[in-house]
Length: 306
Image 1 (tube, rainbow, N blue to C red):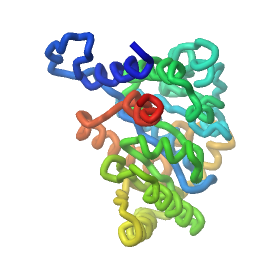
Image 2 (image 1 turned 120 degrees about the vertical axis):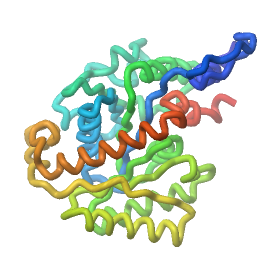
Image 3 (image 1 turned 45 degrees about the vertical axis):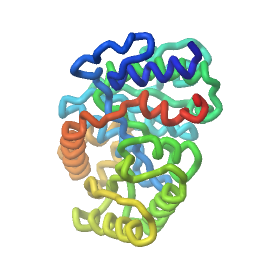
């Protein structure tokens, strides 16, 4: 059996579809649990994307969810800095140093799992079939470890960011009231709209308004983006919520601790907690439609596996 067939069989087992070597046995009534994959991104840097990803993850753990964060921003180590931890290994060690996914995960506060992408993310588009299979077999284990996997992409528009977004079921686009943030967020939406095979029917794009004065300011950002998207693009965007401006966020960054843990009663923490509850509700409502991390990786590489 070739590498592509192996990977396709992993996908089939994940979705409870009989493989050729199972003699078409009747599938069980319940497919194996798949973690929900959320990609957090932004049109530009400096809008609090990584901070939002980390604190949202921590808020979700308080709702009983097991969360793993994958830092897919190979240019920076923001997640490491914000969590105050230094991982020993990253995704490259799975590909080139025979490390397992269990060895690569570092656990932080609230038992949140963290995987550093390192240069492995940069190399994803150039992997060979055997490397793709090796990565997929390891990432397959994340469905047993996590309920939700949050991927923190790089900021802006580049090939790796667009690929992550295209193959995600859920995308959280972090935007601030700054005109440049709104403009760059629209630029990202425009790139997606012009990308072949991308459809907002398959990928839910959700706006998180960060560092705003209040709910009305957050809704104003959403209205601006949804207005131009519906008028000039063939995209639908949703409003997930807002995180208010809070001086405690800056204080927590300086201390290298998440604001949700350091200042649990601050305005920002209350805002992110509200968003987490909404995410949790969506997770429960759409549990049967989750394609999981393996489904995402398969979409990522399906052209190479043809």
